[in-house]
Image (cartoon, rainbow, N blue to C red; front, side, top):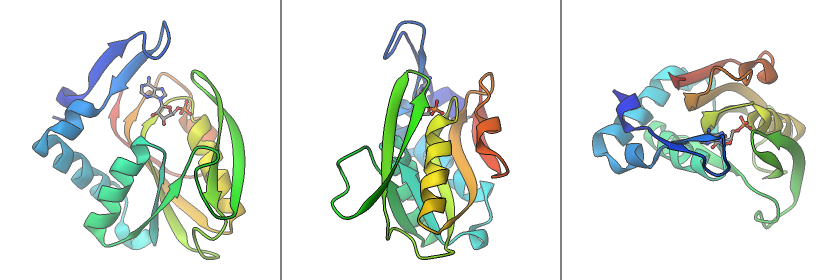
Length: 169
Ligand code: AMP
């Protein structure tokens, strides 16, 4: 049923990209709740301590998930947004390149982290996020996405870390 709430927007943000628009899902009370419930069911909550979301759409799903399960949330942000001491990682996108940052004290040594984003495409963003979490001494236990573009080799970039996705295209 979740697939009914995903809108394809051709040629956004560049010609040739079919953008998977999640705003109809967020707009729907049933769609929003079903997506958070499904993410909560995808990974055993006892296996992680904190939820980490990637700016910006990872914040929407990650924070709602963390709140529903009584977990804390830690943000990975675009450069220059986090105010305290950060660790930074560069990566290639499906459309361009970018870097992301995390606060060096976002998690304690050995804390177990569930990584959340809206969509897995090439895997570059999540691979960089996994690297950031490891660099601050925490342990990513799994990744969870609303959407996976399974015609791209995103999963392969994430190594041993289990990948969960609610919808595959
Ligand atoms: P990637 O690093 O290639 O896995 O890209 C994942 C990030 O880019 C996610 O944060 C997505 O929100 C965004 N993204 C990449 N491709 C698309 C797409 N076709 N539709 C919507 N978002 C996308």
